[in-house]
Every structure is written in structure tokens, then in C-alpha cells.
Length: 115
Length: 110
Image (cartoon, rainbow over all chains, first blue to last red; front, top):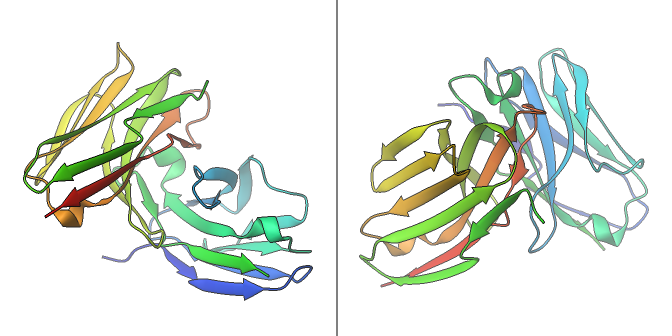
């Protein structure tokens, strides 16, 4: 079965550079969530999109932005990268609010290292 | 105080042992999720529960809505079960969101 696809799997950037992370939800899922997980930390909710509109916002820095496209894939754009942005960024998809039969499906994550 | 708490934080076991991981939460929920995260980061959804009990292979998850408590059991544990197990809830006040517990790191030795 198709899963949530994230690209790239690994990314190394220098301070002050920009990065774009992509997330492709599974078919039928209309909601995408982005999470940031620092080393040894709980996942922290960043932002979510439902039907291409932002549905909720968490602890996402102003240097980050995201959007969901007409094919439901989502991109997380990160600018002026800082060392503290080094983390695992994973996305999840669901039918609205995870209430669908499938619940949430998670991607494998993009590991971002800022040097 | 975190809205979702797990215990224990770390757990070691010998292969074949029965394992229990507990999750307590303080908010009203629409669903509770048990997730497995292997080294390297990938998260797999194990169960989504809103009541009762679910079983999948050697894994059993139970939830008591009145007591705001859930348990994940692993029968006949195996070294490949070694991972971080995370409890996450969808709160009623925002069902789009997941609130994660701090995770339980399980190591099963042969």
C-alpha cells in the first residue's frame, strides 16, 4: 500500500541557507500535518493543512512557511536556517481530523542537519 | 504537567517477556494512538483507539476512557520490538491535532 512519502530523506545545509521539504500524503487523505522532533525530544506540531488551507498552527517559527497544493502534497519552506533547526521533520496525513478509518499515516521523515 | 504522560520512560526486557507500557492523559479525547518509532526516525501507527481493546499479532492495546488511561502490551517480546513507543491523543478541543507523550524506549535483549 502507498505510504506517506517525504523527500529528501536527509538534508545538510549551512547556517542562513534555505531548505524545502516535501510531503506527499496517501491517496484519499486531504489533511497534512508537519512535526519537528529535535534530538531526544517529543515531536512538536508545526502546522497543518486541510483542503489546501491552513487549518492549525503550532510552534512554527516565522522563518518557516508551508503550503498545500492542488494535488494535496505539502511543502515546508525554511529560511535563514539556524543550528537549532537541526531535527527530524516528519509529516502525517489523514482524512479530516484523523477521524477516517485510516487514522494518521506518518512519513519516514526528513533529517535536517544545519552546520 | 504534560497533557500526555507515559511510563516507564525506559524499559529493558529479555526476549519472550510480556511487556506493558502505560499512558495517562488529562484532556478529553476523540482518539488515542499508539505509535512505534525505530532508530532513524520513521513512525508507524500501531493502533487508533476510542474505546475498549484492539489486538494485532503480539500487540494488544486497551483504553479506559473514564480513567483516561491506556496500555500497550507486547506478548512474547522479540529484539525486533526494540523501538520507542509513543502514545498520542487527538484532543476533543482540536481533533486536527495530536498531542504526543514523551515516549517509552524499549530494548529487548536476546
